[in-house]
Image 1 (cartoon, rainbow, N blue to C red):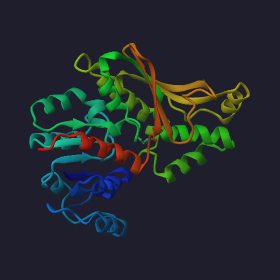
Image 2: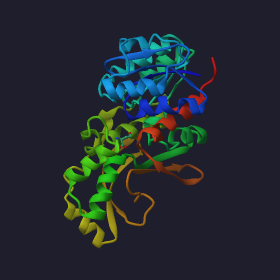
Image 3: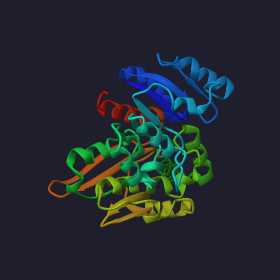
Image 4: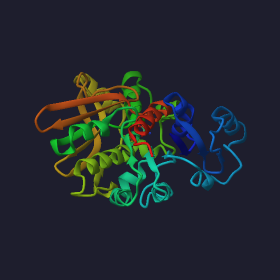
Length: 317
Ligand code: HSE
């Protein structure tokens, strides 16, 4: 397929770099200040080298990527709240051209899920968004395969940055600010890391799961979530938990029509006690008990692999 990639942060860059390995051609790549477009395929290595040197991928206007020749638009610009713009407008533009959309940006499906679905119904294009929940982990496709009607609840560790911070603080006794800087260096933190540490990012993922589970019955947005972050957890709380064979994890939960995110005590040897940037999602099924899905929940190549898996699920034009 021909892919137009919007966003040249860790995820957009990795999608562009890996697309060829999955048999796809990148015909456009845009960042916030420029774009490069070539219907025969851009030279990804040269474009990314130019970004490194000049701070932008190219001299064309960013909007030219939306007008390029492509089968699927990859929306990997930073997540925004409220009206989810400009991501939502990008989704709309692609669907109006009957093109597919694959989202890494959580905003459109967390804040305007019903609008996205309404646009999709009017289009020959499809919208997929596996990469928005848990990086490389196949959470949404598993829900889809299993049938959302037969999943009663979901919970898990859904923010790699917060989990990295909590694990490092507990294991090394390091301070919060120091470990947050390490997470930013790893490239897993959001453009605005308060999204990670205040629980917003985990809540957005839970809202997306809630939307997928609810289907047409109800639309969730961030306003429906009860959210508490980890920024005020002192190292001493982690030490106390450890003395008792437990630890603290930022847990998101979708159950009984509620979406909740907050720090919770969990046994150190429990499945939920993943460490580092690892994530886990537990799906409670109606007839088959619990499914655990665990893996790398953040990072450029990890999230790009979920984007490219979605591209593989799209029908050819
Ligand atoms: N900042 C996010 C995290 C990236 O740390 O999990 C994936 O959404």
